[in-house]
Amino acid sequence: MSAPDFSVAGQHVLISGGAGGIGSAFARAFRAGGAEVTIADIRPPAEDQGFAFETLDVRDDAAVTALAAKIGTLHVLIHCAGRLIRNEEHKPDVFRDIVDIHLVGNLRLATAFRPHLARTKGCLINIGSMYSYFGAAMIPGYAAAKTGVVGLTRSLALAYAEDGIRVNAIAPGWINTEISRRGREEEAFNSKVMARLPTGRWSEPEELAGTAVFLASPAARLINGVTIPVDGGYVAS
Image (cartoon, rainbow, N blue to C red):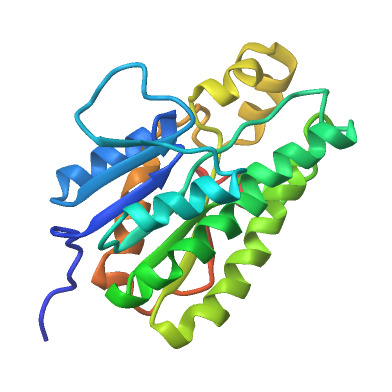
């Protein structure tokens, strides 16, 4: 029996939100594994790391369609684009916008790039959250969208199986990124999280990247329709 194949060498990976903390960590990890990486985001990264870059707003149907027409071969699609707005998401227009980015945007990308992934028997990796499992009083739009990502992942895994496309998701725990900065700086919130978290620390984006690379590799060929918490044990505590 041969050893499991964890290689992603030669694959082309497209990462929405690739200029952000988690997206850029994924991009670096895939490139280190020998993959070609294209990042897409509303604005370029603050520091050019040498990746191919495409401007993209995942809320824009036409922009997503245009990018799909521009991209040739694709093996892996990762939807990392996102944001949250604390204490504002009870407003219907803000709620709608957050859900559009995280959940509807996920579907837009998946639909547009399904033919690409079907040709390569590739995979889609979605990004959930700890709020896929828990309520969030200050960010109900974000929590609702991330809960929806779990269901969407299952549904697309079933729908795309006929094309040989695998669809999974990663649910990050408490990660040291700009999107989490206010939570880290708020003493009461930070203390509550740390009291429950077995690792007792905020994790780095690079610590998520191995799971994404694994899910894209041949070693994960039987993993389909699941959301994997990568959270330092938070959901277990």
